[in-house]
Image (tube, rainbow, N blue to C red; front, side, top):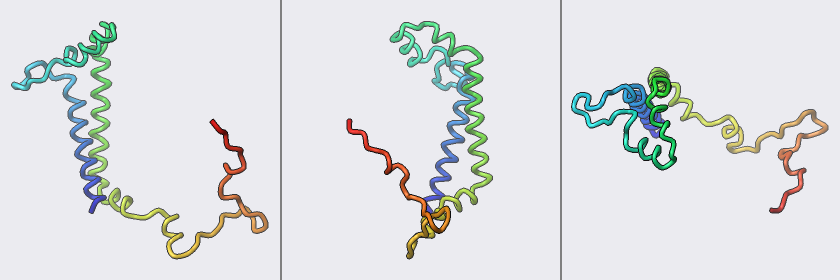
Length: 134
């Protein structure tokens, strides 16, 4: 049940974030009575430009290149949400299934990995190196 809710929440986040990132850079000020400020003159952008002293930051963010890049990320989020909706059952099944290492170690000891029968492989290759004290 929790895996289904996790996948549904992930889909909703992808769709919402994708729509917001794809549309908001292009919405003009006061569109349909919404109180959205213009993309290039929002409060946080003006504050960041004043604090850093980089006043060209506003014109850079207002450029079509940056708006297009942000919209592209939004379209990728929309595509991920749609892909997850199409493959919903497979994703839930993958989240519900246990890893193979967990299944093999349940109720019995896991077999040791060996290169050949005469020389077993060490489980922790990092134990041969000395520990650095700070």
